[in-house]
Length: 77
Image (tube, rainbow, N blue to C red; front, top):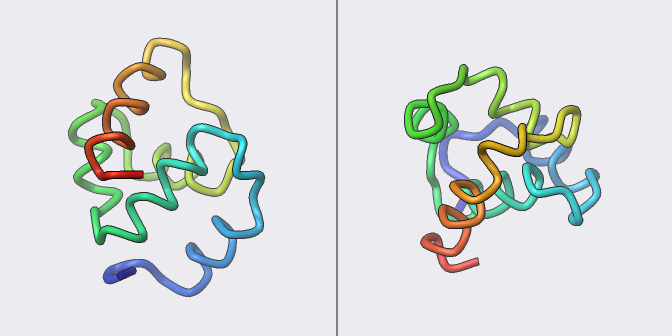
């Protein structure tokens, strides 16, 4: 399920390297219909920052790594 995400966001995420933590988070969010706004609120960052993580443009700061890994696991991916 990918409700709420544009084709551009989904395609960019799919082309990005799956080894990147932010890209993995993006794939889990797209699959489970979790919004970038929700992730941004949970992480205390902007929605644009989350989109940058999703497309692999920026890697999350090390202070977010454990929280992101936990979020990915909680989504079942």
